[in-house]
Length: 96
Image (cartoon, rainbow, N blue to C red):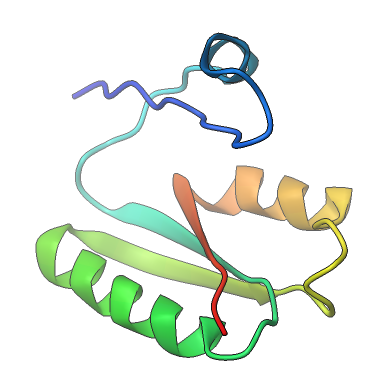
């Protein structure tokens, strides 16, 4: 089964964000979930609830959880590359 993934970047216009994404084949079974904690207070708690909900609703095979050292910095290229190689989709949470 082939699914389309749409990348949404809050800072970019929707048309530009859609064009920035690339399509890749994702199998519905054995999904690999990426989780990026931005290190703000309670983000880890929010992400835990989201991951539990996704695991209950979808066939999640693995979870790659990474954490940024500070909320004010961007994820490094190495972190983004790791998500690209090891996750089918990634969720990010900001909380306080």
